[in-house]
Length: 232
Image 1 (cartoon, rainbow, N blue to C red):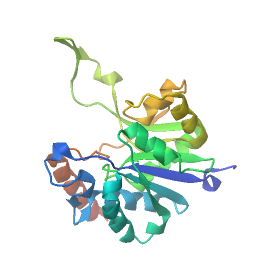
Image 2: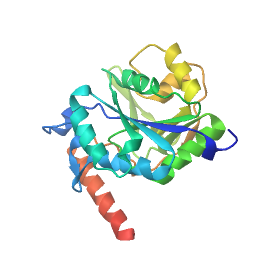
Image 3: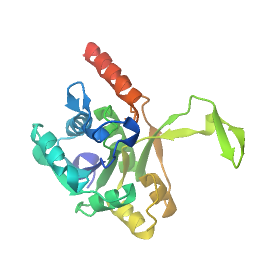
Image 4: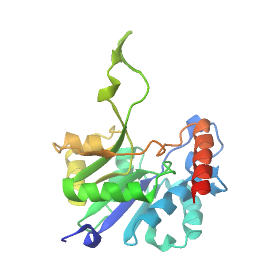
């Protein structure tokens, strides 16, 4: 494989959240945003990023029927396969990796980061193709304090970066990292990668690539989508 165009690529979309902090009657990935489920918006952006991108949608088995309905509503839904999630993010990503049989790149993304745009997806893939990994980040803009016991101290926000997804890696190397690190309390793949002794390579993320976690995030996402539609 001499270039990215000829490199197999698979996205693992992890959508196992329960939505407890949303206070809703269904998981946040299935809440409606501009008339479509949050997860629908995420999948559309990945389908638009590369024609040859395969997608593994990792869901709790109890929500497969909802996932199947969303996939069926998409023109290129045939490129999306459902994978049973685990009890933790680590287990869910590991289950997804088990279904990646090619050598190439894998992009791991939070299913509720529904404002992701194809350009950022492609930037991560291009960076990882050269550097082995690509972790999208944005600089912290708020003041930050570190908690130590009952005390706190100010942290230099100029040295802080907020981590996003899609976190992108060479498939074989990420599989090896997961095989070496059997703790299941990692909160993202970069931590697994680093624990296996590999260098984390950062790439510019986007401030609007937010994760839907609380009710206000849905309002922000609606505003962003409306603004984008006005620019089209």
